[in-house]
Image 1 (cartoon, rainbow, N blue to C red):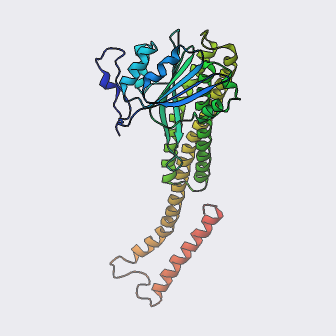
Image 2 (image 1 turned 30 degrees about the vertical axis):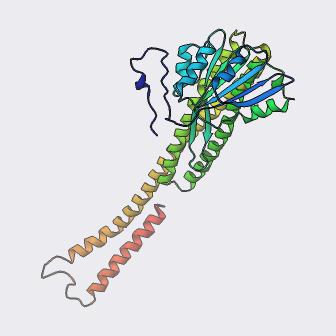
Image 3 (image 1 turned 120 degrees about the vertical axis):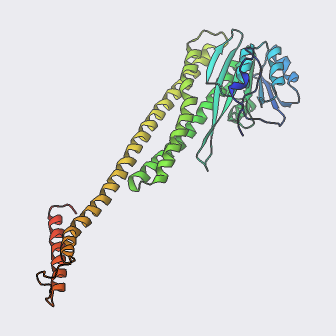
Length: 352
């Protein structure tokens, strides 16, 4: 389905809520988790107003909204939590670049959650926005299905570190879950690239080149999600926001290291694929040269034979041995002898 583009917002006032993404009609799903070290409450909300008390409670609350097409819900969230209109505009525009913005009372993260289709080998990206406040975290997702189940399980266990820490650690855990998922996708693409490299070395085909360009496109999708992440984490780590405690900054540094490591891997894969294109073109050129070599040898062998046949094909009454009863066989023998001599000559020269 065609996504609405930014052109829909042309001429509108900054902060206008216009959903830019895949058109959907299903009802938006809202999940809510409220916890501290000793208690946990988890439920699915029927309306967004049920999450509003979490703004002032001493516990940590996580409101997760699946679906952005109903901008009225996004508008209600913005008004109750005093979120900036430009922030809400970024939430409903799913074509944002990963970034972080500090609004003083809250931090705003834009990230890309990736998934890999094993059948088609395509990497799909969806936008995830996270708002970190003093006692709450609000996450906005394009649609259902995410990589946050590991975070939910840790919260439910009651023994994990996340239950003893504040909302900043919850926001870190969500970011970490997204980044950890990148590793799995990167490994799968790496396996595809290595397998394709072996195919190109053994039997370069046009289908291999097509698959190579497809992999380059998927690596580009991964690169767009990961490269800005280094800047995002770096700004939070080096910033002075009171919302991020020193204990959480240590964990954010680990995410930063993961991002740098993946960027190095992506650069390596891009270099490998560029070299693979050169290998394919060289292999195709060598293959063409071999074909031309064979055709040239065949043509060279037939040149003297054609010369002899053309002489005896002329319409003159008096040609040497024209009336000789063995002339036909002698000429054929001469042609065969010349061909054999030329083959022996080519062999000694190591041309064949």
